[in-house]
Length: 233
Image (cartoon, rainbow, N blue to C red; front, top):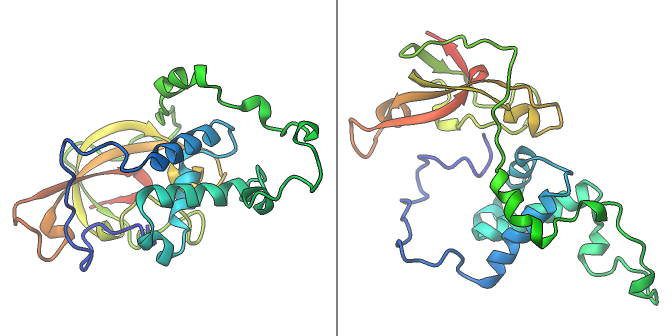
């Protein structure tokens, strides 16, 4: 994760200030619609969650830092819709229908059959998006074992590609805290290279191992990291 979104512990961005517990879920009505449209488009089956995350990461740094949370979502969604051939830029600009053509004569979209209908929303959301899978990779590390995150924190399959290994953890020493089983590898799944499931660990780090000046000297940080992100010590 070497892109603009990889902000953990970076100087200059200020503290994270949680909202009050009674804050509204959505600050504006359009934000709820942005979430609904994003989920509905995901149901079309043209991308997976890792591809959608990578689309948000690929926004320009200027846009990413200047946009609000849901502006980032809807902007990345627009990119995905065009990249995957669901819509054209002209469609998004409201120019997709030929001038003079009656809307009733507009042929059905090829993905119309995958439309998420209102009565199906609750059941689809209840299914969630489990990423646990069987894998032919056996766990290499045991509980309590010392490991080090590889350096740099990049994608080993695609240059400049998506990774869930934070840059601030690159080269850091930690200890295996828990094995979560095997899960889809985002570094592969985000680039249409298959799910490539492998063991996923919770790894415990001393905060002072990650940052020179942690808020509290004895703080610890636990990160969920895939096996290929780690080397044994």
